[in-house]
Length: 73
Image (cartoon, rainbow, N blue to C red; front, side, top):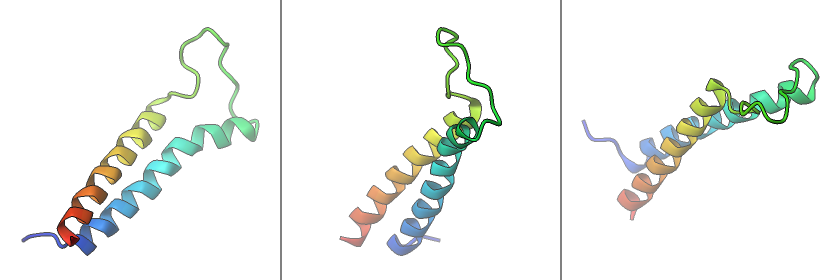
């Protein structure tokens, strides 16, 4: 079963929304005061596993969107 460009675009949009949520969640938690800030030299900063998951989902969304745009030509 081949995926159409419209389906790929919808999957890319969903991945992008979930990825952005994962990227933004640590920032929202820190701004709301529910999470303590790491010391400046700790090397952890906002790059939690959730942040990395969001980053990878966003990259996958961009990749799928490019494929969809090439198929829709």
